[in-house]
Image (cartoon, rainbow, N blue to C red; front, side, top):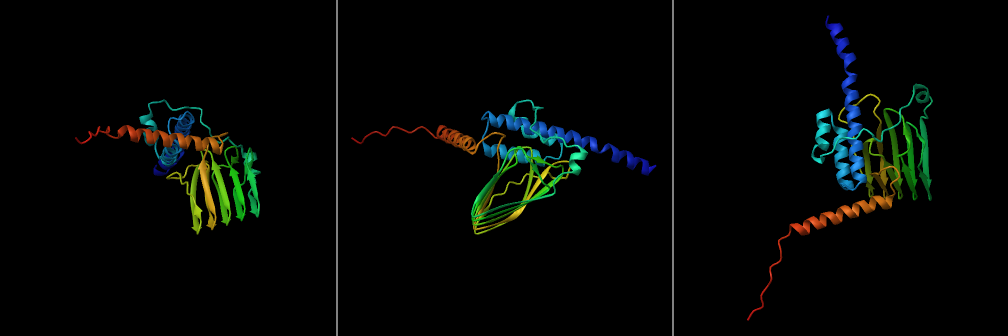
Length: 241
């Protein structure tokens, strides 16, 4: 009897995970759309995306957008579904190297399950906004020695970072789920930066670095304006007689 109950409970468990995944995608789509209309800046987008990716219940997801006063969108920018045949033929490894030079990887491409990136006195840009990632964990190991690597990720992608910086910088963008979900795409970034730098940033599809910087500048100006408005009015100083 207990065995049958255990089987029934196990069979029913995927349903809440599917509902959670679908709601998460809707919330992320809403945040992305509001950001594209300058409702808030990149820092606030990152903060709310982090909460959305870490949420472990539908109620927690609702709280992420509760104060925005908008209905969640169902047009999420999600990763495409992959059939079993395509998944079986998925590329497993790829090495990207920039030594005394540079390279750019962007557009529509299949990202292998394991990617090794090396930049030695060179630069690299890897854009995953239009790339296809296989369900589950994709591992990317980055080594930057007196060089730089820029990694651009879409809002829907969960990211884990575990890296080391020695006389350099490794910017962390950690927005991983609190518990694993079957089929959910996660990018796990590891590596080291020695007298070099690695940056990880979120951008919308089609958004250039210049447009992202403009959003940041507009956000900074808005915050400065709010700070000035909060200051008390200056009092007129009467000259001494």
